Image (tube, rainbow, N blue to C red; front, top):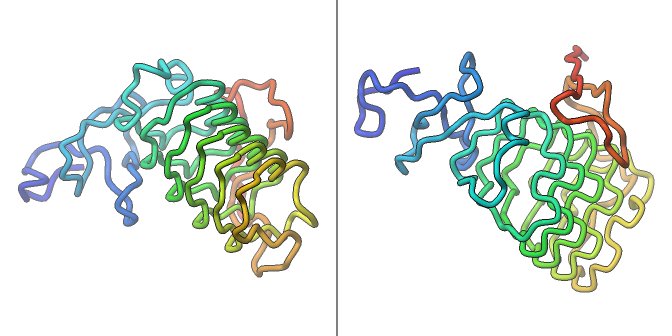
Length: 232
């Protein structure tokens, strides 16, 4: 919890956050509650981060919040977080290890083009229309582990600027391209995922199973979603 005594971590200074080995993701240390504020270990920027709960995340003002200072370790859904708005937030550092829904997270956001390749989406079940009609979007997603995802319908639909290599994705759970996954993406000439091709391991490598989440149109507030941890 405390610094090491280096110039970056003075002795006695609480550091409730830390930066993952990728050098980008900001994670809240165990035992700290929502509302915790402070600096992160090995972060020389001097930023003061704030950890938010699911309900607090949903209440943040989209346009006035400094998203670069928000820590999402405790959140389970980013559903419609930047839906139908003109905003390109600084969210590369978001900790999405506990997130299960990216349902329309950026859909109809006409200037969204943030690099979120470092996001851990290994527990995400639905990416339904995640980036639909994000006409400026053209960032890499090659690092994503999508083996748990069950719905990618319309994920990049109408992304008219998009052209990224997604051949690294393991999508053996989809026998063919999901419905409208890449409809109206005229510039997309780089390799797409190899749908239905066995790529080793299991389709659901994590230990999370979702009890209350719909695949195409969510009616359950993200804060009320139930997650059960199981052992495989």
